[in-house]
Image (cartoon, rainbow, N blue to C red):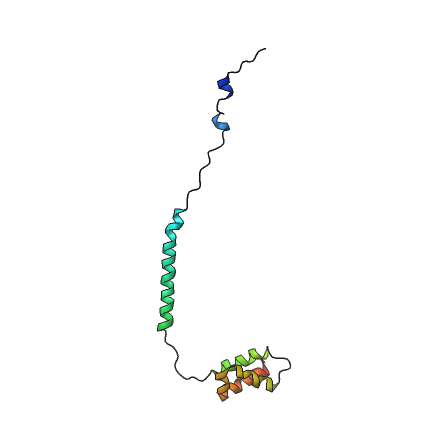
Length: 120
């Protein structure tokens, strides 16, 4: 039995079903390039609105004395940072960290009260 093989058949291209699919180069993302200017513009508009709101918002220029309940709250928060047990001298020294509260007698008393008694 003699098998004849034609040279052209031997070196012929593989059947189409056996060949791997051709690889395509990835396409550049054109969609992102079109979106970035819009995103940058939107961020700029939001920044402009926030900036104008800060500049034009009415500021309280009323009394310059500190808020007494806020001074008491600062005293309560300061108590947690002082060594325990808290002494009146510790609170009197701690109020100096808040110059406006230290300058106002009512706020100073509220701070010291909050510092000494905590959140009871």
